[in-house]
Structure formats: C-alpha cells, structure tokens
Length: 250
Image 1: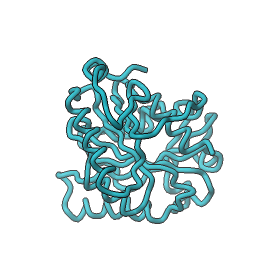
Image 2: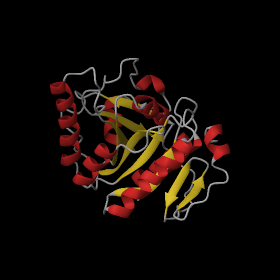
Image 3: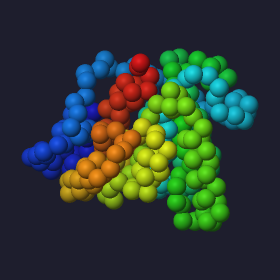
Image 4: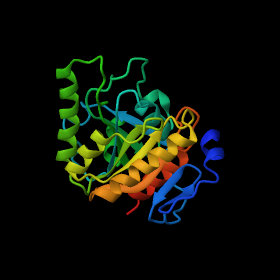
C-alpha cells in the first residue's frame, strides 16, 4: 500500500548517512529488515476481550502481546482499529481520552467469542490509556499513566514483545513518552501518525530527532520508524507485517 502522496513525492530525493528507506512508509537506522513471508494474522479476525473474561486480571497464558501507546489526540484508537481490520471494535470519539485502562484485543485466525479468543489468540494488541489529555484533571491523568506503567512493569518481556509509541508526524518524537519506555526497558519503536497531513520536512525532522536519540544514549528503541495514515490505510500493511515478524513469529 502506498504511503501518503506528499511524503512519498517530497522524500524521493532525500539521502541519509544512516537512514535507509526499507519500504514506501518504513525507514530503518543502520539495520536491514529481513524479507519475511507475507503475514496472515492481522486484519483477519479480532475481538475485544473484556476484563470480566480475564477475571479482572492480566492474561495468565503465554500469548505474546504488543502495546500501543501515545497521547490522546495522536490517533491511537484509529490506528488500533486499522491494524485489527475492524474500526468498530475500538471506540473512537471526538473527545480524546476515553481509554482509561489497558484494553486487550485478541488477534485470531478465525472468528471466535471473547472467551475462546483469549485462550487461542495469536497475540494480544493492548491499547494503553492516552497520555496527557488536557481536559482530564491532573489526578485523572496521573491515574491513567500509573495504570499503563503498572501494566508495562508487570509483563515479562517474553510476553510483552514490543510496544508502538505513536507520535504525530507533524510534531516528531514524544521525548517524555520515549524516556518512559526506555526507563522500563521495553522494546519499542516509533510510529509517526497522520502522515497524510505531514510535510516532507516534518518527516525529515522527525527522523533526525529519532537519530539524535540513538547518538546520545543507550536505548531500548528499535531502529525502525513507520509512517502511517490510519484513515486512508497508508503504511498499515507494512506495520502489520513488522508486528507479525516481531511479535508472532519466533
């Protein structure tokens, strides 16, 4: 699937010492992505698993998980719906900040009810509460962040395989959020959202900012940056394939 046209056209002549374009919507820093078989997991079947089905606890099996984090207005719910292939599964609102606790979505190879899906899922996509929504009280924002931090700290890294840190392509990496994932030593990668609204210079500056993080500190940040436009579907297939390789295949 093509990346958003303004990004593709304007970046065609850009050259990097360290960044390489692995796909129309994917850039890598000093690494080469292996050719992986076309994934067949994401976008087929998925369902929301309510807390009651999980006994109001975190899943106890060995099903791998990938977390999705970002500020409340970054388009997180839209991207989660696009990755799952069913926007109706994820509540979206004109008022950001509706997700207040981690929400588990079971990705399955066939249609199943929530209870069976929770036991037989290929993986869980975990939608973390949005960070920093201004219309919430300071106490509420702190509670949301604590809820996410507790989840991230509690999950063994053999289960929590990866995290996507969503950042608005027009504003670049969210340093505060990336620092939090570094401190918890969770493998994570940057996903630049709203790529259809970003200029070429926005993307270039965002990549430069990510490169700067690699140059100044040891990090659990994975050197792969995806640019997506969830509403149009641009970049979503490439991100699905990456997740299938990192999270599911082992």
